[in-house]
Amino acid sequence: MFLTAFGLVLLFILILIVFAWIYNVKTVTRKRILIIVLGDVGRSPRMQYHALSFVKEGLGVDLIGFDHSPLIKELQDQSLVRIIPINEPPKKPSWLPRLLYYVFKTIYLFVQLVTVVLWKTSKHSHVLVQNPPAIPTLAAAWLISIIRQSRFIIDWHNYGYTILSLAVGSTNPLVKFSKFYEGVLGHRAAYNICVTQAMRVDLRQRWGVVATTLYDRPPQRFRSIDEDEKHKIFLKLSESYNVFKSVDNKSTSDTRFTTLTNSRATLRADRPALLISSTSWTEDEDFQILLDALQQYDKMADTHSSKLPNIVCAITGKGPLKSYYQDIISKTTLNHVKIYTPWLEAEDYPILVGSADLGICLHTSSSGLDLPMKVVDMFGCGVPVCAVGFSCLNELVKHGENGLVFNGPEQLAEQLQELLVDFPRNQELLNKFRENLKEFQKKRWHACWKETFYDPIFK
Image 1: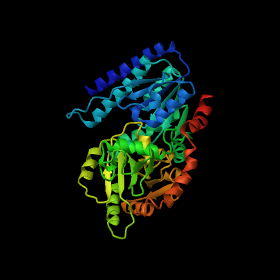
Image 2 (image 1 turned 90 degrees about the vertical axis):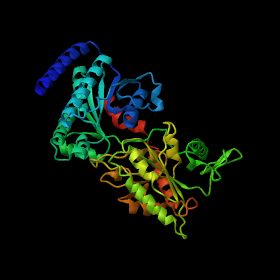
Image 3 (image 1 turned 60 degrees about the horizontal axis):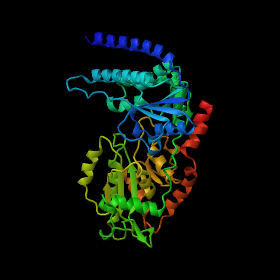
Image 4 (image 1 turned 60 degrees about the vertical axis):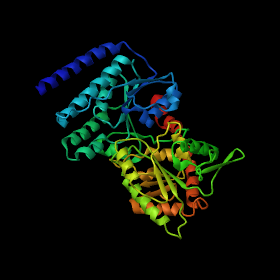
């Protein structure tokens, strides 16, 4: 029965391809790019930056993916950008075996991607797809590019098979198939770009795939923030979060971090240190490391001889493990550390990042070959970072130059003590990192994108 159903599905796909090819031979529209994101488009910043850069060069863009979160502000009113939403597959019934559901989900998404693109859009000159997820996205994008006679481009953010191995184990046949599949489709692409030099080398050695490294770089909205802007965001957040309210908890013009004198905002000399961390609350980020480090820091700050400031730690983002960690945080008693998990409007996030004294990154890569975009954003705002170490992190975080790298909660606690002792009066090491980040802040996304990606391929 299952094989019969599977055969009928394949026959349907074949008929679909034939009709689509006949239909699309007549629909020729150049100067338009198709960007495929098999995920929430609003939470895929790099692909949105691609879209915005194409628009700046005068090209139209169709963005296809799940339409759960709003796009960045710069894209929302762009006449050259069209969002084409697709539906997520139905939830897995309890009676259906996981493997059969995975097959169903793959076919459902593949057929939907192909049919929606071919029947709702005109021909594109290029098809740009985000990887991962690899299955079925790469195959669908490749088929669309053949039918449409478009150039097929893969933007390698990571490897799909390494992420799959976290869930089912590295010896699972699905992982082995996924690895083979990614290599085959990588060879079918007209162009490949990736996020690190380490990944570029690995693609060549692993599959013989030739790629160009296009580093993530911050857009202009991630920038240094002046004291007036900091005061405004702190006032706004104080309406919802007590940690931002003034010391006496009464003033409506002052905050815990800033004071207003003669209509001019200044930073308080007795303010706490503001730490920020952004996360998708998934298993590849162990937030217990941060919680353990903050508990150790709290004990250090308890000693009479300590010159350590109080800390306010903001953890932004949403994801499957958020409620789990919020429960742990609510049960943790700390005297010198306040942890909160705010909901932020999209335009407020870059301002809060730029208002922080230090960023914390707990991202670890399933492949060891990608870099955390949250650190790119922090560096764009001139904010130094403490980041958990992995193999290619030194392509972004230079230990002792623009931040510090740690390998566990004890080391992170020691680094917090080193950076924050006698804060805010003494910020010598933090200021050194901030000064070193000024060169990084000059390298913005569009200029790097145009030089590395657009000019070599599209001109």
